[in-house]
Length: 275
Image (cartoon, rainbow, N blue to C red; front, side):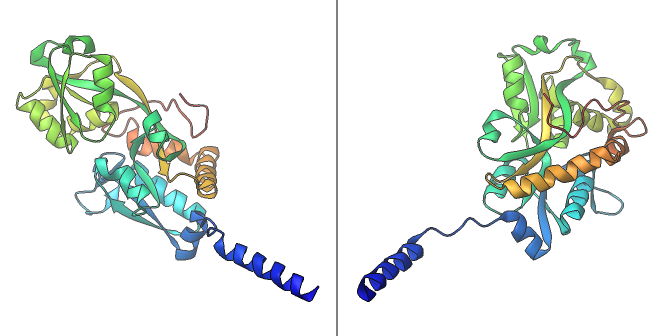
């Protein structure tokens, strides 16, 4: 009997040693290190950008990052990344979450998880007044510019199959190309286009945003797949902001009528029932 027990115990020990290691919980890791690394663009006003006076990162998603970090009881560390590097940076562990103007689309949903919506917007087209364009469909057979790594190129091609798209690394570069006559339209989120025009000074009157939306875009916080505890914690933080009114206050702080973006209403909430 003693020999049989010994063999059984040895087999059990061997089995335990060969089991795969338990999946580490990212939320526990974040709390253990006392900080959450948040990937941001830093070039997309008012999502996140560098304030010219303070030289610090500021913006809507920066404020949300602070709120999420506070809810988790850790320090926020913001890491500036390029548009095209967003998802690779998250998957490779260079950042813990993404607050980087990240549109929720099916292709990305296969790669990462998304929080509750933090912004619902639409992509439109900025055109020079001299071109006489009045509708998005009139871009057929013409050239437009946009920003690399986003959904703009796919969306404008879906809306106007005959359009030619040239992408740039940033909104200022794309707008400069439009000003130089290298394209007849600039495709971006409506808020981004308003922001570009606000910096154009007296030249802003030379341009107009076409009325039709190219697409409707839902923006969320990006997280790595299979991290339910962190996802629940981020969503709980966002839900609390909605309940106490901070979500609406932050929206109007960065997008409201007293800003260069001029939104007079907020037609979305931090909740699951979004388009």
